[in-house]
Image (tube, rainbow, N blue to C red; front, top):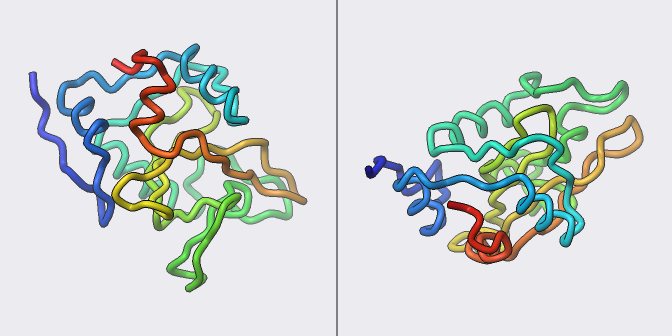
Length: 167
């Protein structure tokens, strides 16, 4: 069975390997494999099952993340919603946004926690034709936002790190 999937969301082309998995209905990641990959790169722990987004959900979740006040949990007192989530907007700031911040204008969410937990993002800032994989670490406090770290330099490397468990 082949599912019709858009090749891009907004200005961002989806990686070919992700398109293939989405079109075949095989975009799935096991929690244990994901946890092992994230642990090696200093990423967050997934304490609940990861939820791999389909193309419509990627677009929908991006809209949710971009919309202030629609986040799954409120920020700590004294910190803005965007700061709490480690987001910045290059369009609003008119300057390049670098890690540890996530440039919400140049990223797409691809995996969410099935409960209130971290997300995995395609980050298009460095190589738009082959986005890297980033994830937040830590939790936001009034003094500090979440930081984002690089999990893999490309989606293909991310799949390789998962050792074929994404099926």
